[in-house]
Structures are given as C-alpha cells and as structure tokens.
Length: 290
Image (cartoon, one colour):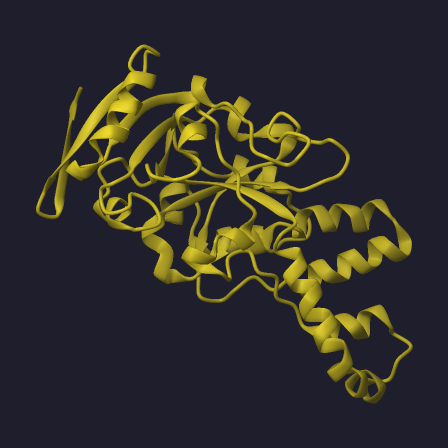
C-alpha cells in the first residue's frame, strides 16, 4: 500500500530510518488520503466517547489483544553499552551483559508506553476484512467513522500523520539509543535533532500479516510539560473532539446490535453527518443511506 501514497516500500523505510528527516517532513513527501476511517466496537466502555466524537488515543502496551509487540523497542544491547562506555573493553562489556540484560529489557518495555497513538485506516467503509476482524468491525457488530483529513486534527504542532510500513524486519532503535546517549552527554542541537528524527520509527513498522489493516497512525509522545493538552486532559485521558472532521457513520451489518445502532442514529442524525447501513452479501458488502 505504500506505493499508493507515492513512495516505494524501501524509499519509505529509508526515510523512517534517516537521522536527518523528521516525521512531519516525511508527510510532505507522501500523497495523503482525503478521507480516513476508524472501525469501532459498539459494546465497549468507550462507546460514550465515540458517540461524542472523542478520538481515543491509546498507549501501545494496551494493544496486546491485537499485537503485544506493537511499538516495542529493539536495539543491540552490547552495541549500546559499548557506545555508552567507550572506555570499557569488549571483554568487560561481555562479562557485564548478563546483569545488564534484565535492566535493558525493563527499559525497553518502559519505552513502549511512552507514546499515545490514534490508529486509523485507509481501508474504506466496505472493506470486508476490517469488518470481520474482531479487533475492529467486530464481525459486523461495530461501526465505522469516516473523517476528513485536515491539518487541524491530523497534524498537531509539527507532528505527523503517517502510514504503517508492513515489514517483518522490525525497526532497529540502536542508532536512536546512541542519539539519546549523545543528548544526555553533550546536550547538543545535533543530538537533539537526531533524537527527534529517530525517536518514532519503532511506532511505524508492523509485521506483514497485519497489512490488511492499511493503518495510518497519529503518534503523540507522552510529556510532562502540558504539551498537547488539546488532545489529553491533565490525567492523560483522550479528549480530542473530532466531530467537525466526521463526514459519515457506517453501521455494521450484524442485526443483533439494534439498541446500539439506534443510539448512534439518535445522536448523529441531526449533526449534518451522513449515516449508512452496511449490508452483507456473502463476502461482499454494500451500503444504503439511512
């Protein structure tokens, strides 16, 4: 799907792995979709937020039901320690590795929770695989939200809205870790710039088996300085109301959800947002406007 957006898979990967190109600059090299979608379950604790147009951002370690390795950080422990302590001999580093492994793993695990991600898809509202997926359309029990892609909601404060690269070779954060070490040691503009460019790559690569999701992701780092409070409240809960960007709602084809569907109809019908009923014909879908 990367080719659809104007870059080959390798060209896109090269940009993600570059220590000199920010995510917002990569977005300028892509053909962005005019519309983006979100498949949501009806019977969840977040239904009220969905009904109010609140875009739910999740911490990646909460993605475990779908992929518990999503946004997991990988780097070469020995290479990173060698870079951190250049005065140590290789023999000394290797002897210390068994003790360092546990600390390193705990650190890697902690990094998985340092961002929040808003996950969307370019798969259209009649994509059968997305409706059938238990994590998205929930076997036709869910619904689909159609958004207009605009700068106000999808490119906040020079962050970027980018597609997932489906590749079984995960992102190697070794160079990003070296940038962290340089920043801590020297606090230079160059090291800070490299850290910005390399600090998000692990959020944008997923295994090929998930490629039917055609995911685009808005990634926002969790910070303590009040940044992005228009997306999160002081407790870190999502609060971004994207109602102005919502153009249509598509109701799933499973007939056992009439109570929830009626709730959606009542809520959205008078907001100048089109409502469609998706209809299943074996493995093909169509829709009709309500």
